[in-house]
Amino acid sequence: MKKIIFALFALVLCVSAFAQDKKNTFYLGFESGYYSYREPHMEYPISIKSTKMGASFEWVGRSILSGDLTPEDPSFATLELRYVTGDAKYDGWLMNNITEEVTPVTSDGEEDHYFEGRLTLGRTYDLSDTWTLWSYFGLGYRRLYNNTYTEGGYRRISKYTYVPLGARLTANMGSGWMFTLTGEFDWFLVGEQKSGVLEGHYVINQQKQGYGLRGGIKLEKTLAKSFGFFVEPYYRMWKIQNSEETDVLVYIPGMGYGYMTFIEPFNVTKEAGVRVGITF
Image (cartoon, rainbow, N blue to C red):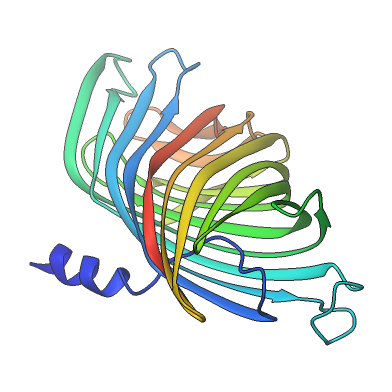
């Protein structure tokens, strides 16, 4: 029942293609898709998989330099907010610190969600009476919380700051129909991983290398002058390299105190699904 209520609420919260004839446009809607996180290069790889649901909002402002909607001012800005959640399945390994024996661990129903906010600036290029190119850059922030606090798992808080660089190619197909093809490269600036592997406090690792990719194919229909709906299959991906090492003084039963080195390993996150929503 909670998921049904969330879906009905989120249906009023998502994002669509760019309006061509309005200075300010708002997009609300719902998304649902598959989510996968893996650490594939570890000696004992782990994975987190989930079917996720999300809500998102976008504002698009045109001709932001002049303040008046005019062909002489092709500038635009966007503000995007997104929240995605869903119970996850964790597949990992448990190592005995004394015997170093390793056993597999699997757990379902683990809490996993993230928030993302983005601000972009750009300009449009009219390629023809039908086709328009929207190029942009900006600043993005993503915060993920994952709780696999079962035997062999732990709580994770992941923070990414990045620069989105992308373009949207839109086609006005007539009769209120709009087609949009989106491609984006996300330049990873810095990340922070807080891992609850030690009881009582988090281990913090800094990340400095990685990148993301995302894209979508969107079809929009205008039903009235300021109202419409859309559907968009989407894909998002992150590849983040090994973090910097962190040395922590710990107590190991039977062995005493000593320093342990922690690292957030190379990881890959993939999402694929469909968004639907309204625009006004």
